[in-house]
Length: 226
Image (cartoon, rainbow, N blue to C red; front, side, top):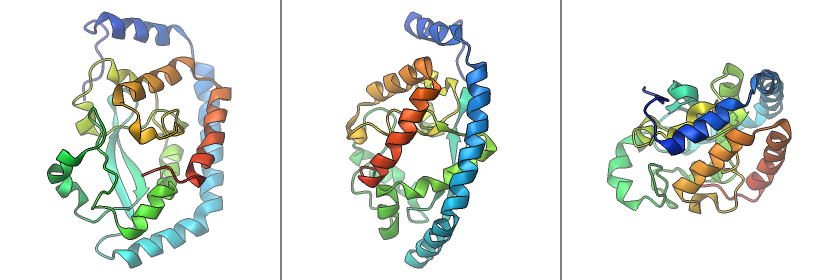
């Protein structure tokens, strides 16, 4: 998948790209990777009993498919990978997307509707509490994702990206970031979401990552996701 040709981007994108590249994050990324491995391993060990229960309940609620779901996402520098989640939708959910497109409540290339008919009964609660995302800690262990970073988009979303939007792909995507902890995040316009991610990339620090990680459980507990 094509990424960014620095020689062909517009001035706005070039200036932002040069501002990000100007800073060195090599030490930050090495330490971040070690922390990712440690924390993801800890989470998976702690939540393993709950994850087994979730898998069983998903199959009981909808035995038409397995409890796990993998989907191609776009990661750092446009590289594609499989993101793992607990299944929250019917087995034929992807085939229903075209007919539901007119109901999309998000602007830009992102698709999301409040009362998505594809979501199962159990899936609705898993999404509300963000428990469907526990499987992504396996992606963190693999290195496809990190704990804190921009959300990994779908290939069909990236097809509509401008070069400026592609700046989100400069870093490894994460489980949580600034958008995920934003109040009423599903009401945030796509362009504002992009700016939030680029701002995070340009100013990322250990302290900021820690603040985002500490706020994420609060968002889960208040069940603002969908």
